[in-house]
Image 1 (cartoon, rainbow, N blue to C red):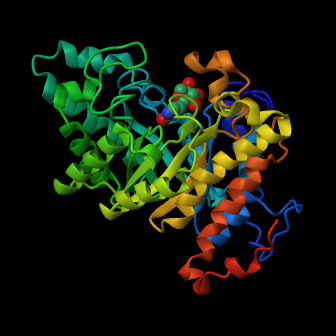
Image 2: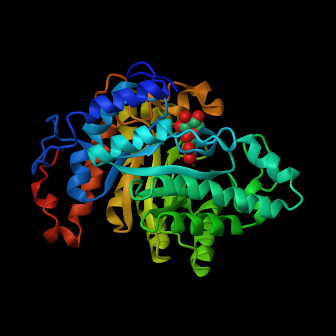
Image 3: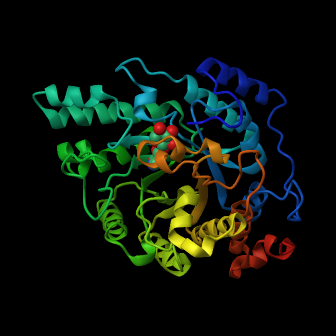
Length: 408
Ligand code: XIL
């Protein structure tokens, strides 16, 4: 991960930076009741407060100091980008490392930011190798994996009981492309080791264990859905999986839709998808779960290739990017069950896309609402203003934001 907003901090320096920010304590400025586009206080955070939709960013475990202040200025929530992944929490079995997680939780608590704890089980990446080794070596592989999942979920969720409001209990359980599960190893698609060992029951176990460890935390399944706009097989698979989980009374509270608009998004990106994405979120909501957009970023080179000649100037390109943001965020605002939108990083150069294996060749992706200097891009305004669409619904009378927003 590149570090546009300062030098990366070690765990100890991170704790010190967080402590410095905590010193003046928590008092948050009262939410202003009006907002002008050009005003510094007319932020995504402001719109989040008015609309009642959480707006977050991802904060990395090696975060530059500036990210803390950016987060406070623009968002009222964050997701732990890496700090709670199994390989970070417990790289060696029996020696958990809570330094980064503790610092981020303290930062959130002191500043009343909501945390999405990300993520307890992710077969595709960042599961320490000892997990698979131990299971494979065990005479009873299923019992061993159940034991390890139970211990892991219990210790992480239990440690932060009452302080981490939402958990991505399971990340990307389904096959990367197409429908169903990852059964065989591929380059981008390692077999779902959890599924291959325990079947779908691994999800039941993880959710039930998390519920016991913190009965009040909201438990989410987080998944990549490339483009529900066209009802692709994966979106249907996810819907069917959630239905089965609910039928088995698995305690799942919500579904996170990642929404990295980079690979596999059919062209043009999320075109006309507001209606269809709204319908997809509504279908999920009908199953009795909340929905969130959890990892939004919109790669500029991908926008360029999707729109070709329409993206003739930089300014046009940025507007097209903003339009994708709008098409993803507006459905959330329209569906009451949608409780949050999170973008995957603060400033453009912080984006994981620039350094991640398969996406790095297209760097810079510039996929975020804030540019390298921390200035607001058209995508920033698109996200902020789209959140306020919640206020134009029939609930508007109870929600004053609808009458206070001067169009920008
Ligand atoms: C990414 C992080 O941003 C990177 O820093 C890390 O190297 C790999 O993981 N889907 C997810 C996230 O659910 O956890 C991933 O985060 C991005 C894709």
